[in-house]
Image 1 (cartoon, rainbow, N blue to C red):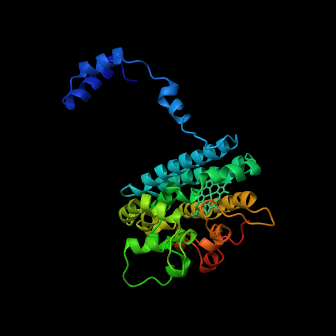
Image 2: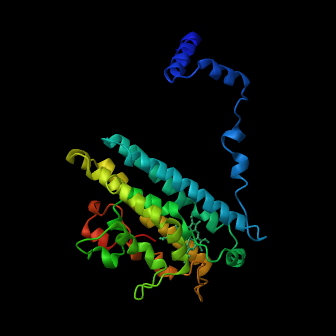
Image 3: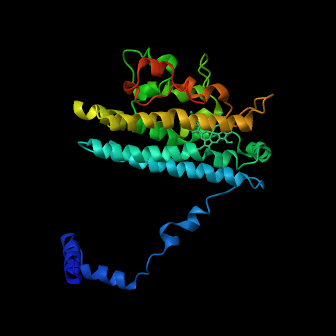
Length: 308
Ligand code: HEM
């Protein structure tokens, strides 16, 4: 154990090395207030971020569950970045980080009922008009997680993915990315208001990030490992689990919630974002796969077929 004088010695050394006077820091300690939970966690700021646009009480459930999703997605991205920025990555570290990513996305998939069952459909179908044309589609954290995970080629619309031109750039890939199908008329190329706003806000950032992560996304990190590491069954399992949770299970629980609120059996209601959502949101249609190299052709052709 470090004695008190050793500790003081170390502190003096630390600040002197930085060219700073240690005494000023001792004085700072003497006068500063001890930290408390509410300041450290920023509880008041956090709880001031819910601003319903109507008087329907269940709109609060809707806002807070979206905010919980944003936080968990960013906890995932935090783990993803530790993998992407790791030089000379080792299998154990990779598996540990993937384990955390998988637990976060599982939390999201398993907790969707908190909102789906917690929110009154009648209230939703009234307060949702005050949100038009906003949509969860515009959640950039989902797209950041995708860019951290794989090559953008893997996110291209299935109609184009297998027939890419000989030369293309990142802008071309984003023009043909799977999520264009939510707002672009495939024949005329005309984009919806939802999509135009989303791209105005984020496209430049997505392209810059995709260029930066081209050589360091999770798939590239895995591909750069030794042949022995690449065969590590726990690593392969963890990567495949991320694909299943992010690209099948979450999309399916989300789709089931959309169906409960927007499809009453006799009539499919138009979504606030205006997409052909019943078709678009299904993982079998999107066929978004982060690590296609780990799946057989048969598994890829039947993507999501065995999941309800
Ligand atoms: C009653 C609850 C919900 C309904 C009815 C619903 C409905 C929809 C619909 C119809 C779309 C397609 C785009 C559009 O036309 O608007 C969509 C997209 C999306 N929503 Fe939701 N949603 C709900 C809750 C959530 C929650 C809690 C989140 C969490 C952030 C979320 C995140 C997303 C994302 C990321 C997309 C884009 C999916 C993709 O591109 O594959 N949604 N949602």
